[in-house]
Amino acid sequence: MALLEVESDADEKPKEMSKRVPTSMGDPIVAMAAGSVLLAWYEFYVKGDKMDGIFVGLWAPSLLAMASYVQQKSIVNKFKRGISSF
Image (cartoon, rainbow, N blue to C red; front, side, top):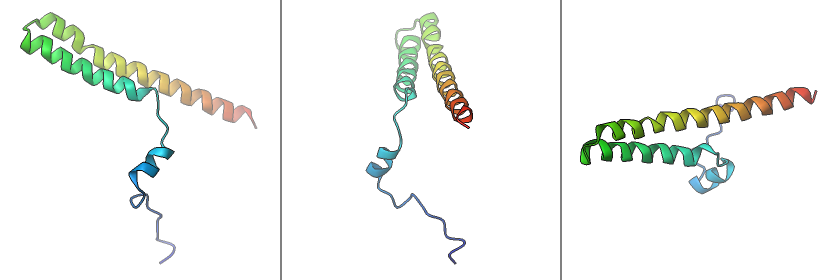
């Protein structure tokens, strides 16, 4: 039935999909957050420096919160510009 057919992106090749998805500021920050978790584990378990491990471990949620704030701020600004154009 034509009414129930939904166009699927599953057939689309990954390279074509990656062209449509813009790179955001959050992508490198997610990598940095993951790196800080690995560094925190290294400090905590391998070096045995528990205080430094905990300190570095707190970088990940801080980085992700900052990236989320910046992304939400840009969305709100785009939304406000869209409303003011009417």
